[in-house]
Image (cartoon, rainbow, N blue to C red; front, side, top):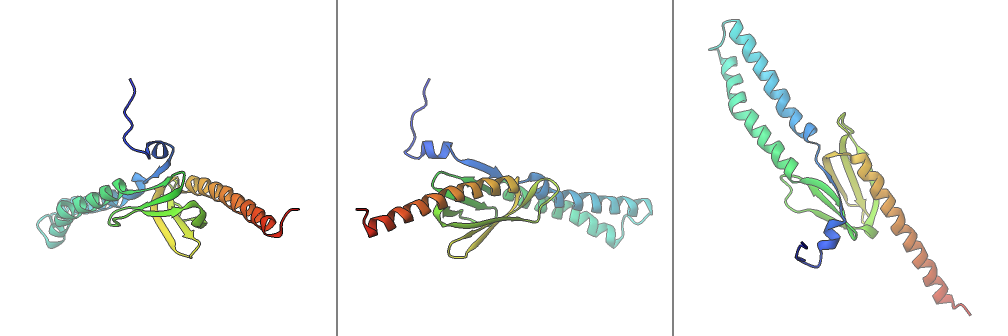
Length: 175
């Protein structure tokens, strides 16, 4: 059974390499706040201060703060990533950024990874030929993404050098 073609970009989308968010690095703050305030509340309850102002603050953080942090992390996880498509690099910066950043391959000047996290997550920084830097934080396998992007940049720079050389020969005349 064959699937119907849905549009002219179907083949290009299928060949894209995708890197997603590191869920561990996004949800770790939620876990730290939950465990920290939960333990503090248990200690206060064991000491007989369960009705005190600090215990009430702990309850507010656990009831309101933890779900808010978790929802924020979930929204970032759902909207963050990098796609290496045949004609452009697509940078999805995550919530609250609304639009992806599209950088044509010939416009990518430099790629770096900063802030490596223990879960193989990091921040991928892409600079274009105009000097504009775009960062994608909490990216899983950011090092691998940078390696693939650099390899693809090298191919485009090689093609550009070849075209420049052929253009120079054409301007001089070959015979």
